[in-house]
Image 1 (cartoon, rainbow, N blue to C red):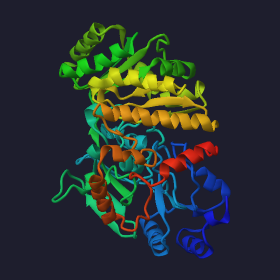
Image 2 (image 1 turned 45 degrees about the vertical axis):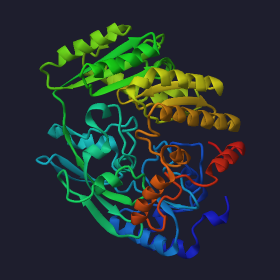
Image 3 (image 1 turned 60 degrees about the vertical axis):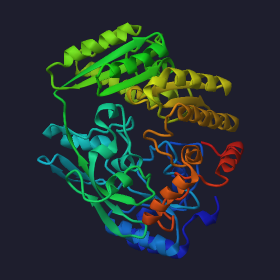
Image 4 (image 1 turned 30 degrees about the vertical axis):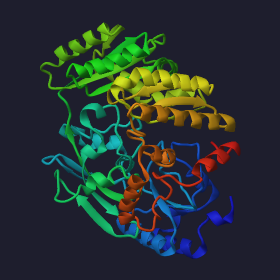
Amino acid sequence: MGDDLAFKGHIKKALIKIMGKTWVKDDPITLYSYRCDGLVLHPALPMGVVFPATTHQLCAVLRLFHEEQISFLPRGAGTGLSGGAIPGQGSVIIEMFRFRAIEEIDEVNRTITVGPGVVNLDISKASNHLGLYFAPDPSSQKACTVGGNVGENSGGPHTLKYGVTVNHVLGLEMALPHGELVTIGGKCFGSPGPDLLGLVIGSEGTFGIVTKIVCRLTPIPEKAVTMLGVFSSVGDASRTVSDIIRHGMIPAALEMIDQVVVQAVEKTLSAGFPTDAAAVLIIELEDLSHGLNEEAARIETICLENGAREVRRAKDEAERAVIWRARKEALGAIGAISPSYYTQDGVIPRSALPRVLDAMQAIAEKYDLVVANVFHAGDGNLHPLLLYNSQDAEQAERVQAAGAEILEICLEVGGALSGEHGIGLEKANLMGRVYNEDDLENMKQVRRIFNPSNLLNPGKIFPQPGRCSEMKIAAKSGIVV
């Protein structure tokens, strides 16, 4: 790494004056550590990393970068999977983990005000004693921060019933790229004029840097029934998903795990899942106690009518916790069977599940790869995992090509490029397949209102000329981790 990546002298002095020497870093180890997020295929070194602790410090940093025309981007826990926190064009990373205060819990209005660096699960831990919790539950909720959830409009297994992050945030405080602090929304639903809150949530850190979040809390359900449907065919499991919803039932969660993932989970967690099953469905119902067992019985019948060889019910909270631990830690379990994996995030109509899953298998075979599936079946939100060795540049190139073809299949059946991981760096060049030039230009005009100089997180979401060829060159040169 060359000296051109480090802060220039006068800039570093100014940053140290704002935050102190401890919180301004451009040493080789720090730069290497921040070269990528959960998407490891396209790493890039930042110019440096800064760690503001207050809105005053953050706004001062932004004013300095605006004056010096230095690009920058916010980062939370780095669990994102679309490259949204990968630095570009010598950008500076603004690490937001010091914004982790839980400021206020309002039991009456059922809100909690937190900093963007607060870990998702900690919001529920702070409010559980009041019988409340934060509904969005990404698989990485033990590590991911709520600021990142806002940036990507994250979901999770319980999205089917409760919705995504935008449905559980009422207000934001945000620093604009030139250092101005603004407030959007508040403690109640709705506000006059355009829905700026909905516009900012999911903007992937390209409109501003969120400094405070008013989250909506949800009452903890009176009862939960968690079931495991075991199938000898992925197609039977897929048809079961559509049948459950066709019969007018909306489970809190409806997740599918295929045999490859089941075997990885059993190798690491010993959750008791049958390793010879082609697929298992995790089905969870949440509501008042009255009538819930009857609804669970109807779902068991639907599973059996669609070829399930057995349907298990968790007998108690301990068994339920084991099932959900297996689901939430499934991606980590892949490490037991493969050195690396590349995950996608396409969305399709539920009715297309059998066709698309077959097509994904054919694509994997075409590129001599193994595909594993663990995903939000009820939403049609797919998360295929392509297993490979990230140290092998040729495999890295194959896995990217296979991933692109999987997304093309999703689009062909009327789906979308992303359900919750975002577009980021990874899918930017596929946006032209979904939107025409006028559509993309309209979106860019909206971004320019917030981010006129494009200093904040440049190169994300929209197609970049030459980006595809740059990725191929990077893969061939072995710049993968």
